[in-house]
Length: 122
Image 1 (cartoon, one colour):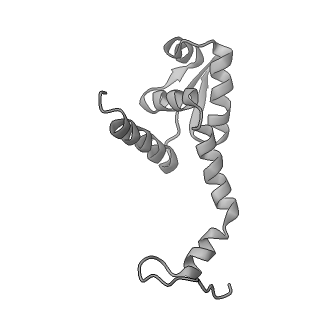
Image 2 (cartoon, one colour):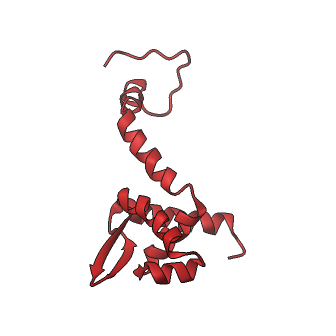
């Protein structure tokens, strides 16, 4: 990596070389953006939050969300594809829950904290 020269020199923070090296990892930032894009939809945030608290089938999720089953399935697919939720099949029934990953735990915690800060009347 080449030496980065900045127009202003501040004493705090990481070195420009380190920051430049991290910023060059575009694929990693793209992954993060894709995950946040999935949670950029209110319905998906609600479904993800619900599945962080329980394991449910599409029919029950549909009833709780007051949505059709096909609409819920439409929102579950990208959450599952990004690894935020997992599913298991029992006979013909498929049950969904939040993935037991650091990423899912962190996003759940972030949702809870943002709601606490932004919605004081909770």
